[in-house]
Structure formats: structure tokens, C-alpha cells
Length: 230
Image 1: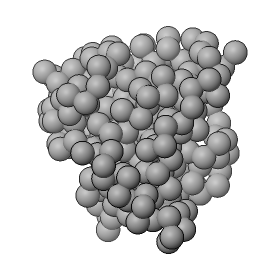
Image 2: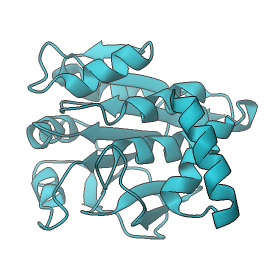
Image 3: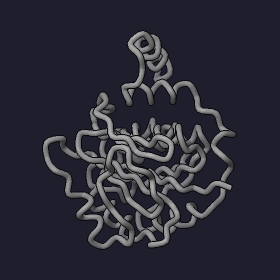
Image 4: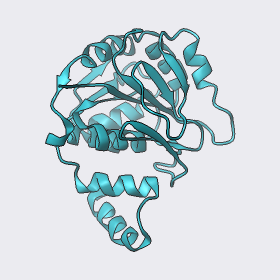
């Protein structure tokens, strides 16, 4: 049986401190790969992997295009590139911004839902605006698990609140409780993702973000996406 071996995490304002606390407390034997999007400027080098690996018991690095996914490793989206899960490998794409961001939390979460279905655990931490809400909806559509940081303790609660307004989350917890929950959930067995078909809207959104859609398909698909969003 498959296990919940894909953990996707999104954060924005206040996210460096939150991510540091979360990653530091993940166990060395975590049987999952962890993928992180933090909103960062496109013009400034990201030091997040260096910060996270100081006390992490897991390997931490910027994701590289085409590299295979390995359990027990933390992959951080580099500046100005979307981080996308594609099968057993990663992709970095300079696709259109989503929610004014590249990297986008929604883009990562959607790709995880598309390829890994119920094996996905999504986590949205502190942040402004609403990036992550649409992506978490995709995670739930494919029977993944949705976790948000308790908005009452988040320095910037808008992102967790937006997710909670969009879907019924499985867990809303203080940050200190999330690492133990991730360790436990990642050891659970789940149904194979093939039992949960990928909705058309997830395919459309993924192709737009990945810039893999032919021009003849783009307008009809964009119209369908707009109808779905409304």
C-alpha cells in the first residue's frame, strides 16, 4: 500500500521563523519528501535552505530541475521559479505568476495533488493574502490531507483563514504540534491515487502553470478555468 509520502508546505509573511521551527522538529526518519514554497523576491538570493539546515535532521537544499524525489529530504523552491512535482521527479518552470507570485504555493500544491493524490499532505502556514487556498482545494479533491497553522497564533493569519474559508480542513493546529502530526500521518497507508481521477480543472490549471498547453487549446481552457473560478 502507498503511504502519505509527499508533504507540501506554503508560507509567506512570517514564514522564515515558522518554517524553521517546523523543519527543526521533523524527525530524522521521516518517511516522506518535503517541498516548501516561501514567497521571496525574484531579485534576491534565497538563504532559506542555509537557515533550515542549521538545525534540521533532514537534508535541505534548493530544488533542481529534473532531480528525482527522495524521502527524508526537504526541497525549497528557488526564487522566480515555480516548483512542480511531476511523477517521481521535480520540475522548475518560469511559468506565469499565480496570485502575484512565482514561486506560487497553489502551483506546487496543485501539481502534488495531480500526481500523488491521497499521498499528499498539504500545510499552509502564516502569510498575507490567499495563496494556497486554491491549491489546498485541489489536494482535498484528490483525497489528500489539509493542515493549516492555527490563525489565532499565526503572525499573518490571512493565508490559513483563506484556506479554511475555501474547504473544510482536516487539522488547524498551533505550529508546535504540526511536526509530530506530519510524522504520524506520513506513516499511514492510503489508497492508490488511481482510485481518485484527476478533475479537469486541475489538469487545465497545471498545464497553464507549466506552459505545456498548445496555443489552440489555451483560450478554451482559459475560459473553462474562468468559469470554474467563478
